[in-house]
Length: 232
Image (cartoon, rainbow, N blue to C red; front, side, top):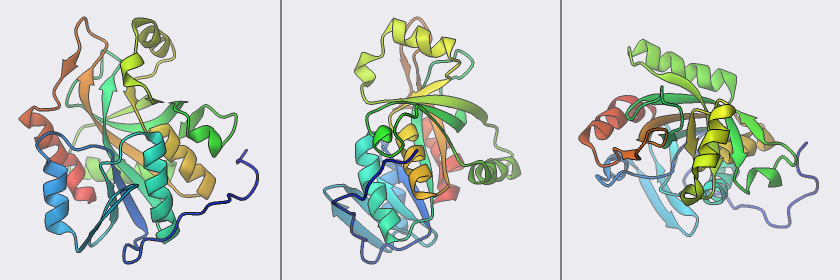
């Protein structure tokens, strides 16, 4: 069930940033690889209090706007501008020992542990990506002979509160990875009737004896170039 009632505040369109396709990039690695390519390709760029926006030939991009509430605020403005589909190109932490650093995951389902999605779809805790859009993304990877995994994520507001008991609970629920935005973006899409999907690179592992992090590794940049850049 959608949240009842009309909002008192509505997002304003971003003049000059119309495109039916929207891509959301929550965070950039220390190398700044996303920012470099966006600045080179963009015909227009705008810094706002609710995110930085780029207009490319085939998409509008929300860049470096981390967390569920920030993501939804920025994307609301792109929807008001005319966006009709949203693709997340982001990063996640592995909770499943079978999901390793540098693996690429197509998200089919997201559990909400963030505080934003309930304002769009009250009482719902599990959100799905849009089948046709997800299939289109996966078909593109298959055509390029790029291997990927399909997985379930949990979106949290508090990465520094991921405890051992929290991890065990998520593993019992067969949740594969953790991120900070997917469930809220899927809820936003459901509310507006807009297809959403998420493609993520595993940047760290939480299931082992020690935390493993490859956010600064060159191989991560290679995966971004190969898997993500064709969708920009």
